[in-house]
Length: 351
Image 1 (tube, rainbow, N blue to C red):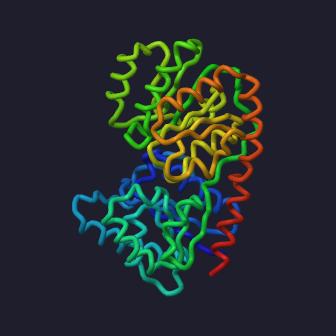
Image 2 (cartoon, rainbow, N blue to C red):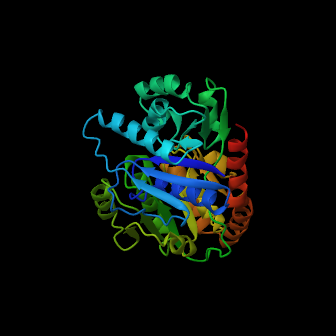
């Protein structure tokens, strides 16, 4: 039985990377073929994972604060120590920084794998330079999309493995007049653009509501926009919830308004619930997940008018929503746990 150790910054945050790491750890552990360790660099010893972990997953809360860059040397030392103690065969990073410091984790027969959860262009130029140097020393590189893979031709061993999503038996009620969006309240997610688009279509579809689930520093900005457009009764900002399935089940259309993405896990999840989606065709991810005109619509990045028009088209055509929702649910099998496990298993067996 092989041991896999996954390193991330903080398993307690509840963000997309944390969810993806939890799902991968659970998937590998549940197979019975792998021991799995999750190394959370910034969480305290008493902290618990935001998302539930399989009983066979071992969580290490490392308790670092990153007050200075020197703390990274402490993280490297602790990762190496745990890998030795647990006889780790594969250690996986999850961010530019953590992937890069894996070059300092040296152990006989240990395979070091960089996993990218954000698109290439989202990182500053100096980070791209560091990645070219550091990643070349690692044993493999895992990307979430084929489009992002094109940026890493300098590495001889790259794999594309999307995030897994749980198989859903239930489907959304597509008659529910609710647009749903989920994510952090930051510039990346573009919820300011979504609120503006909703304001444009709302007079023609006054029965429709918009729910944005998340939290973050841009919340005051969003509340100001909602007030500006007089949408207090139509737009709801919903705090993060572990019962996210209920949000998908009680929505009629999913909307992704991101300025950039690494993958767009929420789009894949929305498809698994049979939700048609409208998304900006941003870098990277949406075009790998949605088939324009079949299970949703892709519109030009940051084009608020195009977003509003496609949202309105779906809102006003229940037959189209049902048709696209069925196609979405059928296509979501691409991200089924068993499919994604086979890809990871093949990668590990490749060494």
